[in-house]
Length: 450
Ligand SMILES: *[C@@H]1O[C@H](CO)[C@@H](O)[C@H](O)[C@H]1NC(C)=O
Ligand SMILES: *[C@@H]1O[C@H](CO)[C@@H](O)[C@H](O)[C@H]1NC(C)=O
Ligand SMILES: *[C@@H]1O[C@H](CO)[C@@H](O)[C@H](O)[C@H]1NC(C)=O
Ligand SMILES: *[C@@H]1O[C@H](CO)[C@@H](O)[C@H](O)[C@H]1NC(C)=O
Ligand SMILES: *[C@@H]1O[C@H](CO)[C@@H](O)[C@H](O)[C@H]1NC(C)=O
Ligand SMILES: *[C@@H]1O[C@H](CO)[C@@H](O)[C@H](O)[C@H]1NC(C)=O
Ligand SMILES: *[C@@H]1O[C@H](CO)[C@@H](O)[C@H](O)[C@H]1NC(C)=O
Image (tube, rainbow, N blue to C red):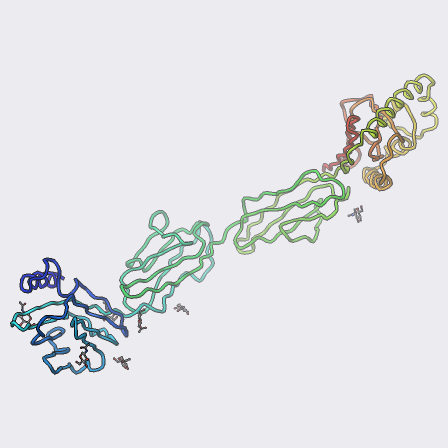
């Protein structure tokens, strides 16, 4: 290159060309094996024809034109000389064409115009390939070395991961002029698509390698409501980080469900869907297992919005009930009730009015939780049409209710002398009911403790 600059300067002086401007551009000129290059001069046709123009490489003649042309043996059908600018095209390049190319001109006034430039012929980069570990890689345990290779002349290698340049540091080390990348130990975020780009001035090639780093399952979370309305669609979704993807198994109250998806779907929730859902995950490659529970309680459907007339009706009904309670107290209905009832529950001793619902609830109180559940469902289905002002009772204390009726506009009356000391029903089932006389909404809240 220094030669080229020196020559250019000389030429400038000799030919009166502007200083710094050579006959040939500063090289090197890069060519691809099998390709074509053009040595372009900045000459323009002279007023008087040149006496001689010659191109040579390493002292060997390519073409000497003095009127007739003398062409070197290997250049016969590979060159074209431009008559006007004396630029030279060289085709079907071989690696042997690399070298110093010189243009020498003798002008009509016998002055000499010389120029030279360098040609470098590269073999195109092809068949790029990354080789990497063939065994399974485990996060924080394994090491990996990726080797990038290709045919042809390679002058540089760049690595990318997921579209970003990969840089050394931390657990990443480059060696053999970027041919190799060593990652030790592999982290979970080292998994992904690696790309190596092999470059020379005339071509490039890329290869990719998908590195899988196995880990998990861990970071488990379960998404989903803990309270679902009966007959609603419910999804409990189990999320876990795992490579390869974890196998899911859902247990319900300790029993296999046959569901092996991340999402546990209940298309229409029933009361018997209350309970403990356990998401169990396993990574067959790491052998790790993680599980987590999620409780679901099923509550009564929210009532349809009340019309003003309906609300007024309810208010009247409540007042009537209050009056009835007062009358009942007066006439000693409690006594009548106790005589009639076969109910032995302490919680019922304060019950002051008897209705169909009350009878039912009382007789159920001693039974097992699952029977209560059944009855709630049955009665819920019976009450497809809300019937305001039927079967009302009035609660006198807050206690875990055991009443079975589920009519939308029913009001429960459950007294408990042991107020504040709720006694869970047998088998740990707990059924509570909250009554809101302002909105007419009732909520069953059943949960199971083990
Ligand atoms: C090398 O690449 C150049 C440009 O991409 C192309 O013209 C030439 O034919 C290629 N050579 C071979 C041997 O494939
Ligand atoms: C260039 O020279 C060739 C012969 O050397 C001739 O056939 C051709 O006409 C010339 N072209 C021009 C544009 O002078
Ligand atoms: C290019 O050169 C090779 C040998 O160097 C030859 O086999 C091939 O035919 C040439 N191709 C052309 C288009 O001249
Ligand atoms: C120009 O090149 C010719 C042949 O390569 C050489 O004989 C001559 O000395 C050179 N002249 C200058 C000024 O470099
Ligand atoms: C990469 O190299 C491997 C092993 O040397 C070979 O099995 C594979 O076919 C190569 N892939 C490509 C695209 O050359
Ligand atoms: C290209 O590779 C060939 C053979 O591998 C070698 O002889 C040649 O010097 C290389 N050329 C360059 C420019 O590196
Ligand atoms: C739960 O109740 C529904 C009806 O409400 C019934 O179809 C289903 O079989 C019950 N499932 C179990 C496990 O008892």
